[in-house]
Image 1: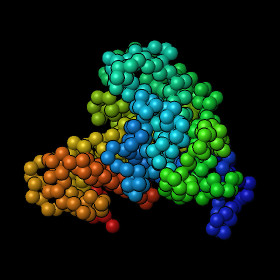
Image 2: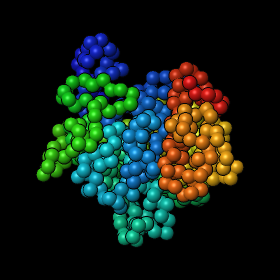
Image 3: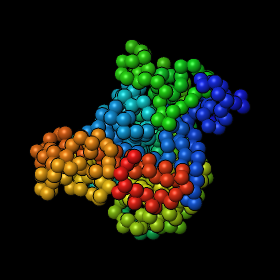
Image 4: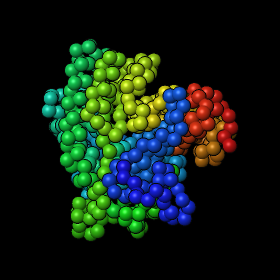
Length: 452
């Protein structure tokens, strides 16, 4: 990424700062990854995107259809969420890519000023099972909404993700079933590699078509001026209707008002290979040859034993570049995100905290709690006595149990708020531990200690 020509920058604070820490030029920006602390395997750093900085290792809440279920965006900001995950398959079907594009991409559409990552939809198409057919060209599938037929190719998946406008987008891959024989695994891996090449080629040709406006970007008040980004990301207000809302001027398409096309998305590659460690090595090496600014480990959490997941992750990590962000897709429990961060994973996502919350399963420092159980009917204590989230500070277990038993919508809201807070707080502890030089595996013991 380009930096300003001066050796030191006096912008804003009047203090001289090394350009490697906070001084950036607005030109040619997609993402930059900076490792600030590295232990034996774990590392803590910053992933800098067009819509803000992300402290790594990071857990990304899943907002499949441009929403984290039951939680409004202002509360997500209060929780400290720095990046959300959206899904191309679901957004492509509803409300449609063009609808999102015409409203400024996902950032404008969902009024979210911070970073976004979109999955290409490969996993969702895989999960359709009997409703899909895979060929060299792409995947034909039927919508789970109305049964209509659709066709995804690497090129159309890239076009959709460019239209959605996430900061980080994913190459189109085939997510394979478990178990699978060696021949099937090899065939799938080779197909994913060919699709990765096609994804990158299309992205490089069309990446400047992203539907961002100048006001959507960090630090655009003075074009060309270096910007000091906060650790939480966006610089400036973004309330809908405000000066920096990124609203489209009436009558003008987004392409006509985009003033900073040089600020682009980043395309990450995905390593596949099933449970075959040799194929994982080959997939990693050949994906790196194609060349991406970040690499994901995909094709896991598809029914394999948990110990097998770890074996594949650990084996694959040793072949991924140490200076690029490493993203483990679709994992996992609080214990697992600590474990994988300790191995050197930088990014993780999972629907578990939000999905479990909707079913009354809550994560606490004292273990998992099923709030639907009758034992909590008269429990006046907080959900987690060691948790400082707004739910634990205010509501009793008895009240949360009542809401769930009564099928109140508020039950989903409060349960989700707590679970997300627990995950995000766990990851903050991981980052703090890494920066102190401690082993992240000891962090599980910290969950039972009161928060500051």
